Image (cartoon, rainbow over all chains, first blue to last red; front, top):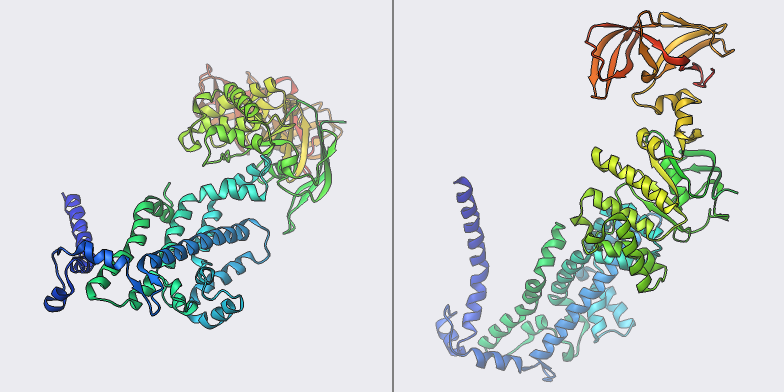
Length: 273
Length: 350
């Protein structure tokens, strides 16, 4: 009985939490299906209107910016490229960094790891000038690489992979050695498949991180061609309903990726086998 | 020249710990050698040096006529079964067995043939598609062995492979390992701290203590003729009884009795060793035991008691003999089956 009650009670709390989070989103979604004049005169709408198709097609084909060089579709493409690039590069780099730190005879490996870890305390915003100057020296301003590279080294992901590798028994490496696996094969045939779930989790994590970037894309791009969705949210002109529609659409990619990969995400973070 | 030669092999860890001292031995082709000793005696280190998982500080190791000190483990052509099996958790049994072959560039058909043969030999054919996590302890053990057999290596190395199994399975697997080794005929080295395992498996046995080989020989040789107190105490179950005594002019005095005509010229303080199974009850025996505890094993009884100053003296008699706690027994040593050791260094003197 107590168990029944407590499980219901915790469900209730969860439900309240869900409502608190979902109601603003719903308000924006519902409002985005009305005409601008209704919103301007009557405020946010709780119920759906009949302008869904009209508003959303308009946004998708919207040409933004001063030179009209960018469409919403292009922004989605840019954001997708940036987020995927960041996710791929940071997963690969942290996988390899962790491999070196744990399995190679690196002097002061622990110290090196903590130095890497400390970079968490130095976010991009703090090192934005030197980073920009490096990117400009490398001629990467106004390019996809310029958007991606500076945020593609993740100390958090390195930490996760390192801690995971440390739990893998040494005998596995020794056994693989006797079976003729070299350094590269051990990485590809053992560590990568064993950390599959964690790789997916980190991929999602870094995808969303890359997708949500705002300040860095603004700084490193001056050409409208490279606008991302998050930049577009701010830069976009047009009526309020179109902006609402764009906000809703901007949420879709990260939500979608989590829904598709959530099975791995949970496993990867909590490591239950 | 022997198949495997260890010459003055020494291991010193970077922190200065000396794990193995100038160990030399030869293992013949097809022989089943067992390293036995208490934990931390260096037996695993020795095995791992043969496998190439530990560097050799000094000395050299020859395998099949080739100096292997600097040869990479993958090229030594040795296979090892680990204590926790170290199966590849993300691969099914088939791939666990096939992995080493794939790395050797063997063709797919050959791999399949070899894996299936090994699986049949070990009776794991039905599990080939399963992941190790879906297997029981005994099955995992077989897979680990299969992984070693399938490569047809020059030498099998076993690092306490039975210690994670329950008692019944351990005895069964012990038997199977021995049978398998005889069938396949591959030279094997088996490390264990369990002296029963050592006795039953070995063609020859190396008793190791503190990084040194105390004695090397067939199990029966070592049981009948231990060279030191350590070996005498380590081999045999229940353990040999040790009594303090004094040897003077071939007469040994100990705990209220005397033994005459000891075949030794040694004079001085000694330790007398008597195995529990080397005594029998008589009317007027040498040793008077007052019984404190009786362990009935069914086939045998283990009688523990006191003789003068020595407590927990053990005597083994057939299970049919009924002996009560508190009774007094009179015992004789059968056929002069006793061992005398120098008290100062533990060396055998008779």
